[in-house]
Image (cartoon, rainbow, N blue to C red; front, side):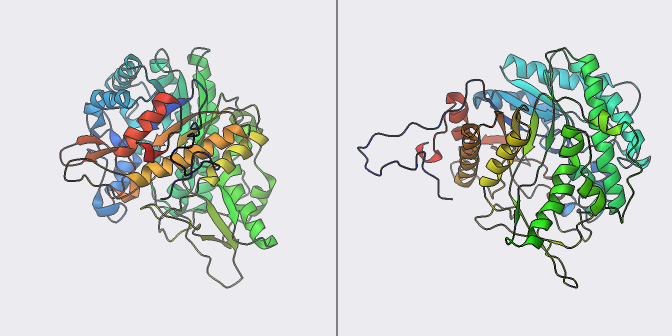
Amino acid sequence: MPLPPADPHSSTDPHAPTAAPPRFPAGFLWGAATSAYQVEGATTEDGRTASIWDTFCRTPGKVFQGHSGELAVDHYHRFREDVRLMADLGLTAYRFSVSWPRVQPTGHGPGVQHGLDFYRRLADELLSAGITPVATLYHWDLPQELESAGGWPERATAERFAEYAGLVGEALGDRVGQWTTLNEPWCSAFLGYGSGVHAPGRTDPVAALRAAHHLNLGHGLAVSALRGVLPATARLSVSLNLHALRPLTPSEADRDAVRRIDAVGNRVFLGPMLEGAYPEDLLADTAHLTDWAFVRAGDPKEIHQPLDWLGVNYYTPTVVSATAEGAAPAREDGHGGGTASPWPGADRVGFHPAPGERTSMGWAVDPSGLHQLLTDLARSHPNLPLMVTENGAAYEDEPGADGTVDDPERAAYIHAHLAAVHRALTDGADVRGYFAWSLLDNFEWAYGYAKRFGLVHVDYPTQTRTPKTSAHWYARVARTDELHPPTAD
């Protein structure tokens, strides 16, 4: 991928003064992220029970070649080695998730100390290395017992989540000061219960909308529960995979397609979480499916809890169009090949590949979408700090003959997106940190181990970790707060 110059006016004269690289604010968090099911392994150790992803992986045809997170990259046993890697890379923050079935196996009742002790040890190791622990309470691993009782479409799951949040907050609050309730609830609701390409694999548009509401409610209840047990200095957030939307053409019909996907892809969470109400157009778009009677009086107020920052996850933009009556909508939305749609109320919206280079996921490389999201949020919610809590790319990474894993495409991808973050900062967005996805190659959900997002290569048979060239470049950025071009390394 060709790299943008650090300064658009820079000269090609080798004797000309070199423009200083863009500089990020002091205290900007430089991190990497993982999730429990993707890295921990040890799925049957120390009292952990099955999550919906354990069950989904055992269902034939759901995950590439029947892969699972049973071993993953063995972070449960190798976390000290992984923290040393983070320290060597100059990271100042690590975003990890807590496995709900590891610390509360049935989704209710007291916590399991073995599970809680693992996260205590992890947090202690991070703190001793000078790395800020950032804990996510839910990254898709619902205890199977709760799914068997109805899962996220049921209100009781939101109530159980709040109890779990309080339990974990009380156990780790003396060590962890940064908390995220949910990671990408859109995926949990609409890929898990709508299109069925994620666990638990259900294909019911009404269940997907019910799940979205109860994830919202669970978030609000969890924030309240955490505020009740954490120190006043704790900082609470949620991470959303917001869609950077573009119409295929400037037509009014395509602009309305953008509106529909904005409603069910973005504002279904931003509305209640940040403004205390569901958007009226979303309710109208889905009125043929549900009357939304599952939203009880007082729910929007419960969901609308003050946040200390908002996490933004971004990989690629979303291009949409209206579809003529009788024609089949284009379905290239980048969310797997399920036969059911994850977009209730948007049956006539088509999805198209964005132009540009592509990662091995088939996603277009377009950092302008990240700038768009950050600046739009800064305008609509100017007093809410932002963090980029996931951003990264999968490429075909293989060690060379000398053992080096050279991945210039990933370094170029992250460089371009960090340049977009810097432009957003310049344009007034209050962005406090950036977390590369992912620290390690790992289990990539329905793609199994076929896609590698890591800054660190993992040889799965031996579990050997090898930092890629992108990791060494990112380390230089993290240590200096300066966006050096990868070609300089």
